[in-house]
Image (cartoon, rainbow, N blue to C red; front, top):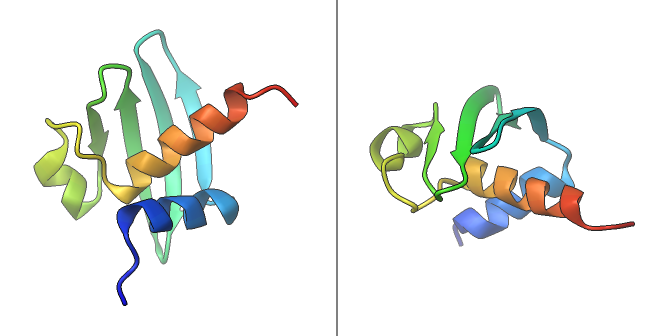
Length: 83
């Protein structure tokens, strides 16, 4: 059975493959290490994103996040939680 985008995103976060690289008022930049690839992405506060993966190339103008963008969203939310 194929892994869903949500499952892959959680696996990337759990495996510490998501590295937040910069933040602005309206965006979060990150690098996501997936397999042999490094994906560079920007996640915007309006729900849109830009990712260098194939899925991101076709869906970045939407809020239909690729697994890498979803992983960055999960990681960002995880960092906001108090310890």
